[in-house]
Image (cartoon, rainbow, N blue to C red; front, side, top):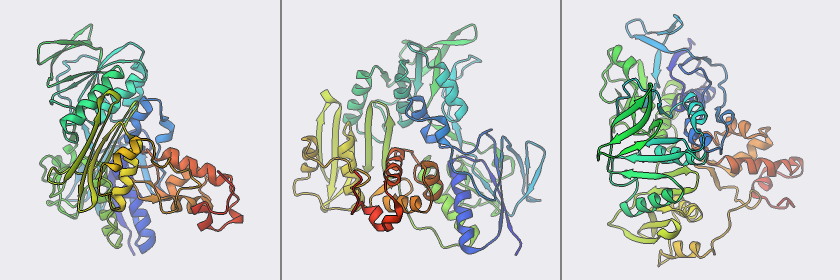
Length: 486
């Protein structure tokens, strides 16, 4: 059988997931494929979501690398410069040509720059490893920086910079922070906690212009006429899909590359688009989880595999910020029963929505332990007490169960939410020879999403290293029964 030739343009987190899905699916179906990946960055694929954690000093750049692909031609530092649809050929920046049966555009999105820097140095973004390195090098104690945008990334970045004693100011055009996710009351608690941590917050204003000396930014003039000193301005005000290649190839584009439910261009079915650059019928999501679903669906179709099982992760959002905990799950519908508990003096605000005896949504600020309990209750569909406030008051009072150790954690417990990986799956991978976090990631995909489960995976690996696998069957290892390891 002639191999199906697939050329993937881009090697971000969605492209990497697509290639991984495709290689796994073709092993199951036996359909031969030849895969070439053109990755414009001079790095192997890495976890972009963890860049702010690197700035905060809670992760290392070396730990962001995603597992390598087997039997795939990955070309780093090589970009696609043109797609010749009539000949079904992709031209790359090295002058090579790549014939395809399917070309997958996974070009992602670039930072939206909401102001004109007028040639001034000091305007940056945080989208790549190189961006991260530049910001770390610039983040000296006392240095004034502005973060444009008070959404998830902006807050995470500001908190990370503050851990390096940078004088940070968040400038946000909306009336409250994270307006797409938080109600005003919760957002006020977040703002106050940020300010307690030494981060200035300016709301309801924009940067009108930048001022500078000797070619460098020195300050930003806001729309209210006030000026904020800063010699570094970091744009975290959204992204713009990279569609230049698709547009030049004559594909229909709007905000993104217009595709059908099958992720294939409505202009040319031999061209697919996934992730931030794609615009499916439901619109551009700008989130990782929908991109991963697109990757899985397209990979299954090319491999002739069964459609992937639905695994939604985008209904739980966690802010990864030093000194601040924010977790959102489901949707707080005002038509449902809503319970609130707020204490701004300690930076805590909880909102819980219940309908038909189950949790339908929650916003948890400054209460990571409560959030973990609520996420478990929500995902498992457990019934709530007659008085739902008990879910909040009991935990606040300190009577909730402590976080499970690797030994006591149930085998069915989900360790990696992003990928639906249980403790059982990690234990089995360890018994089969995957003994490091990186090997577990390659086998199960745990830690390759938001990265928040890395410590838990490391803990399970350490626990398993203390237990002789030859003495117990896999179920005993997974449940922690009949062992003396604590």
